[in-house]
Image (tube, rainbow, N blue to C red; front, side, top):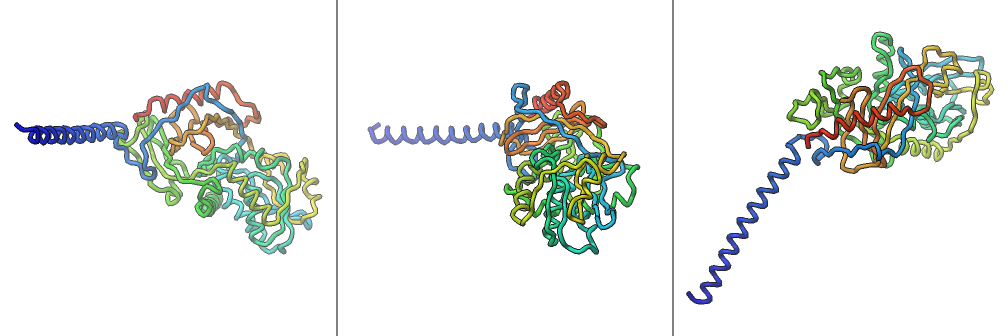
Length: 383
């Protein structure tokens, strides 16, 4: 065998071995990819599921907020005090962020028949800001009177999932209120869709409701199914969660700090003004120079307007550093109120629902339970 023949044979052997190696590598990668992905179909994301890394030593802050809850539902109505008109927009429970634009639209509708002039809005939370912006769009000159600036408001403690939940008690609220609630939900959902994007801190994510018993649909999922996409009850092989029952939707998440800041800036750029002022009684409110006054004080309405039905529901939130790989929400699956929402700057872990509790202090045992519940879910994620 001459040198030319030997070299040709060697090249053929190397080429054949290389081809076999490539096929083998591709096959191995395919097998690994299949294992990692578990073949879970995701309607919105194109990436596999990843588990957030939850640990006690990763906690960066713990905060508490008080939801303004009324079993019969939120209040939107107009009251007359001689030449003064007070229009109420308060008491939205756990659905304030979700309902903001719609409830505020209902409040602004209460100005029908009034001359467009100067309006006062009391409160700079999400209801105050959205009410003020809609008034501006209708031609009013608006001043917001507030004790706290927006970033210190109760709204800034909200979790931010678009889901008008914990707003009223079924069987207590009237049918007329339920129709009002549905109207506000649809209007608000449409408004948030129009603002979707990084500028307002709004994006669409998959949401997974977890339970060890069959999950009963919330009122909003039963009555407003058109506002959610990709709704499905998943079989065990269709999801990675360590629970028996999972319902999936795709919905919006609103980052309160980003959203409140942007709407505040829109208000100022449109000629609005803020004035720091604390109101202790109705006479203080009626002393304002404006004749049209919007009450968006949330829990403050209990004392200011003698609303005995209004009660606080305490909610506690735990935050850990962000993880860009986490692109889904979870609700449920723990021993109590439990959820995980990823934000751009942090991961939010919840939560609690403590009725008639006015305390704004975090409780160590609630923090421990929130961490443990979420760890039990994500340490056992099938990925």
